[in-house]
Image (cartoon, rainbow over the protein chains, first blue to last red):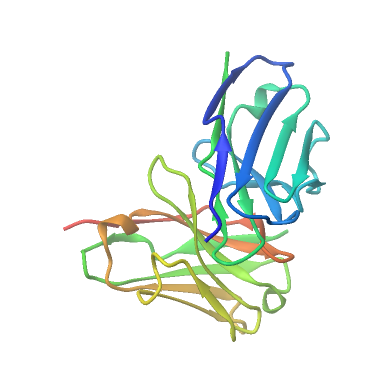
Length: 107
Length: 118
């Protein structure tokens, strides 16, 4: 199985900050990677797929990059509604696997 | 508008069974790979199972293989998850999700809570 490791597990940031979250796969997954945002009590929301493609309706301040084993989610200017937990997920092969999550908290 | 509505969760006893359902609307259900993803209280996301649009191909996480069965009724636009031999570690919120492309979850239901306890 492909293991997904996210870092950091939490980050404190202020509105307007640039935030970067990383995800590392235990083996190469090309660009078969997604990022999700989850707010308390809500279902996850797809932000980025295929490593860098923005899902319809997602603000352009979210961007993704990377290929192979190392990936990054960047929020260019953090907004109040962005405080949430973010998960990466590999879609290279079954079983599909998620990273452990990164909680973005208010500084 | 795409809607996924799960039902069937509740309190189950260890060793018991539950059947979850997910009613889908707003898209061509029979064309899409569908999946179940679960989240234990306060924990991360765990993919559980997936099924092809035709229902011919099914996929399972090792943690549920042999105990869970995914199925679908395309005439009713409904996805199912039969959970047998319940364990305490199956306690989680179970989400139904539409699969975009090869394996991305673009639409999610609100989840149905399964609690395993004697």
